[in-house]
Structures are given as C-alpha cells and as structure tokens.
Length: 102
Image 1 (cartoon, rainbow, N blue to C red):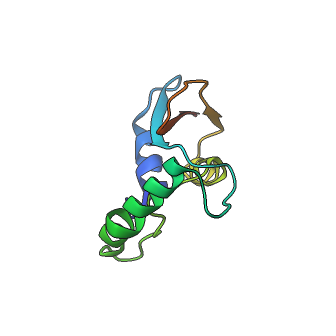
Image 2 (cartoon, rainbow, N blue to C red):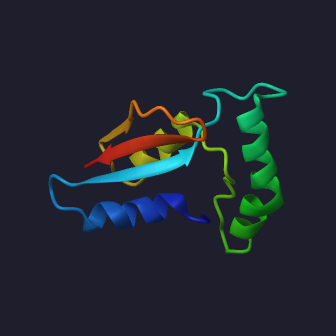
C-alpha cells in the first residue's frame, strides 16, 4: 500500500463514533535482527520481490513494503488520527492483528 496513513485516515473518517478498524499484517519481530526467523525471511522475501516495488510505482509512496513492525503500525495509526492502537492477543504464525479505535 503506497499511502497507508491516508488509507487509515479515510477508514477512520468513515467510522461511527464507537467504531474500530481491524488491521492484519505480517508477524515479524518487534525489532529487526539478522538473519531473522523463517517467517521474517519469508516476509522480507515477499516484500522486496513484490510488495515494495508494487507500492513504489505510485507518487510519493511511503515505500514501507511488507514487514511492518508494531511501532510502525502505531505511528501510522497516530498519523491517521487514531487514539488507540492495540495488538490483539490472537495467536497466528504468519499474521499479527491490530485494533485501531478513534
């Protein structure tokens, strides 16, 4: 996604006052460390081969690629005007789930 903060801002604008947005993103480590576990390697492989190049074709792309860490999702949520970004306690090997509230 070339402009994730703008997309989240549009989603926030469409919410009812008590609404929320559910975001699913790849489960990568909280901090980067090489060489990374097998899931992180898969996600980075996918990111540099497809997701990052695909998002960079749009003007002024954020160029974030696939592997968004929780701190990045929190920053994007704050830029979009969300007051709360919560990592949900859903166990999944490949994905992490976030709940964004107004």
